Image (cartoon, rainbow, N blue to C red; front, side, top):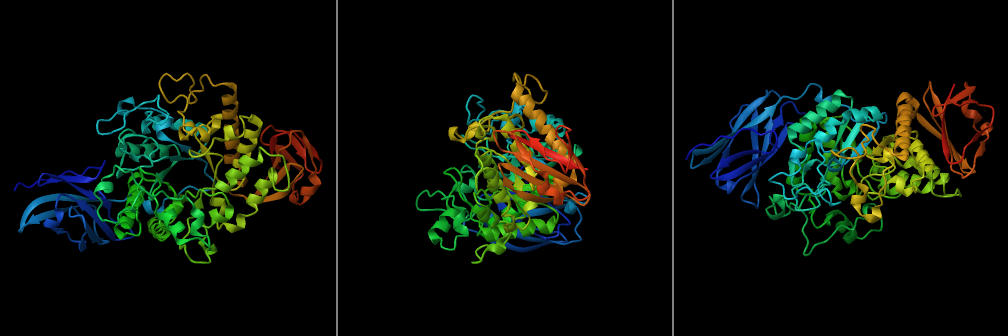
Length: 614
């Protein structure tokens, strides 16, 4: 039989033709010099278990070949010697001692200092965007022959054509705005018949969706972003996959994903995982129920699934030169696996930071995933170092629409932050006012510019890593009650023919222009003062609807005053005199008003002041 050779494809899985069938190897390539010398290949081809596989390369040891229930799949355990140099080695298939197929598997050289990469920090400001809805830089990839869903911008739930080229072309916008990191909603292939624009139903874990571009385009986007001092955080999904992935009908093992006698959706109750009284059935349905009919639930207790996902995340970090990972639906995955995954990633990249999406309403439930020492029943085994701060988001949203009371209004924010003792590292919480899953903050605040200013002011002056959802800077509206598409409308200026172009500042209405200008000013203030980035926080119990807190370092102190009342209020400065040692005066970073610190002053209704002490 003729030998068939294959070329390594950097844009997708390694493939060759064997016996008229397509062969896939994942990961498609790897690197020498990784701290963990172990590598597990998943190889798929028709009846591959009928053939002998050989690898003859000095420094590459075949530890074990696993035959699983699916006869078209094998798993190959390798150990890579630390002395290995970059290059390739042959993977050979034999029948009755004769070579019938051969391909080369590449081991690449790691980028210099790859292991020492620094992730995002509290000094960063993250900008979250949905690629299909941000900017269409290349209309030629809107409709791709191999993709089932075609573009339809008139359909709120359809594909609108945004892509990586649109992001690349507008990198200067992020610099001008002042943000320093981009969290991009999932870019991997979602070859589903409908409702695939969001990216959370992955059908190929090693391939960028062709409607967004190619893997090479992604690598180039990251390179160009880095040149402009922008970090890239990749949105990853380990809890589930898209139902049109080959795994759905042809899984490697019978227990590759959780299966039920009939369709069973998750109860979405993460509280069951730490509830000392929770029923086993509730915990099982939370962790093993499907996220949606089109999103089967991966079984990370299966060791092959676990290895696949761990290697996949490390592959993307190394290949795309990532600065962070946002892990979708963090509590829904098997928590013992998540701890193993965290350790594996941190082993290779000690300074890398991972953001876990923990969508819960209370601090106690949320902090459980960030500090599992709170787990008295030892159901949980490991901590994620940075989490989404939904409790603070809900507090800010509610507080600015309420009259002040014992627990309402500004007291709501105060009480939420007072529970920071439950977090191990609260300064690494990612804070936000809205995102792609909740009603936009402008809508929550009834498009009230003054309330919105206070919300943005709190976000960019309190502790944590602030995140701005695309469009929040121009007060884009969106009501969750009208469906997710209402939260994810196209960014003005991202499409040819848009009458409003935010990127170029063309035809913005008064509200858009004012909010954009204010956002830039706040960001510039934060980025110019270390106290607002990494400084300590001291806050005072709100009084008469006025909330006062201080951010400070050894060399800088800033006073933030928020008046949540419908009328102006006098601020009695004597109450804060303990903060004024070595300081006599202050100046507003918003409007340059000067203050004498031992004299009371009046703050306008529904407003914020940011005062640098001098």
